Amino acid sequence: MNYEAVSHVVSEIRANKPIANNWKAKNDADFEHRRNALEDMMLEIRGKYYGKLWKKIYPPLKMVTK
Image (cartoon, rainbow, N blue to C red):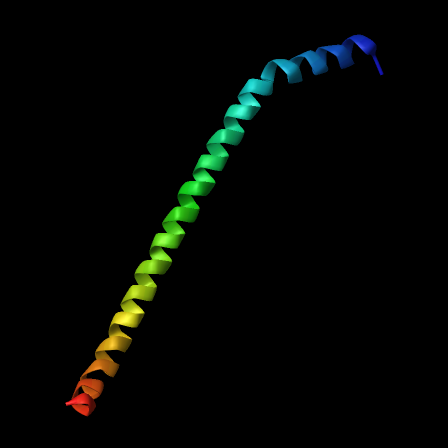
């Protein structure tokens, strides 16, 4: 391999390291945002499910406890 070509590539990589770190930060932030959105959606679905389940259980339970 040509030493000058290799040194040029290495210097380009070193020069672009802050850009790569910035991309990583953006990707990490995007991942966190998507994970939080998924957790919110799961909590909403779970709340709707348990809300419907509670409506089915509570009226008969109310009649039994009177």
